[in-house]
Image (tube, rainbow, N blue to C red; front, side):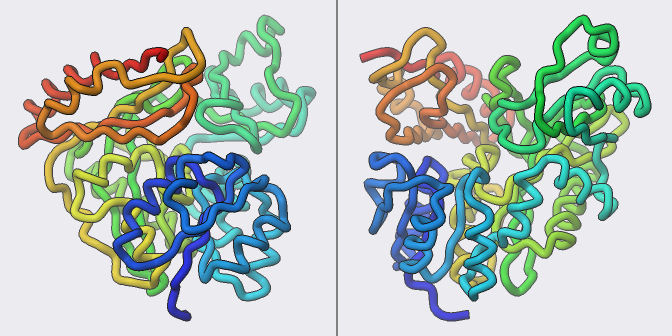
Length: 384
């Protein structure tokens, strides 16, 4: 592998911004591509190309000026990435993996084919196939997920089979959809796992997550997750198995369910830094972002150990306004030790838009819980 002087990032959002912030000290340049001329990563990019993430020419322009390409979002032009990789451009992770992840049906089939534990599922191609699929698979309650295009809770609906069979509710999607049996779970966890070009694997400790019931966005996570050693080891082993079966290089977030009887099953994955790993910036010896930089530069992986127990909360746009905003209790939060504010530089608030996050650290889990509850009550943004 040639020496990497410039890293190209497809996408210039907050994940790209935090990747650059962690990578600047490695003496490399960062070029970004994003449709927004004032995206979060733009101010700290050495070069910012404005263009659609589906524009093949713009992606090729970025590739021509970078030694290695990565991406911070899945919704991009996959065909040109295959073309670039075939021509010898290094892409991490490979577009072969992105192609699987872009389609929830392909994801689930990969898990099944490679004996990765996951919930029972079936793919339907149109509305006419729904009822037979529900009946033949014995679904009672299930999640309907668009195979392509869904994100942050969009394109996902939790449904009751009886209501669909009796035409009591409308079938929500015309397009190919993955129907997944509802699994009773005790908690939802995420494992961030990295694999470098030598095949070295390192897992961060699991986090447990809470979601906004309406927007289906992560609103709170804590690390370490409250798990038995056996369950934690099981989750790490599954994450490692999944990435090795994919022959993946880079950083990956593996979202999982823990069932009441202690079984771990995979929900879905992301082939990039992830919301469930933001806390690693302060709370771990190596952050998820630095770990990806190390992979991109072909360096050894860093220590994923926890410095202190931590919690992370997203700062979301208020439901009642759009426009210029400020963090309502910024001064009070800044006076609290062990509280770290990350605002993403987005010019406007919109309902439920991710505007930033706050990480809380404490020496004990009891202290962390008390401090995190206080911060949770101070997360609002207000119009200015």
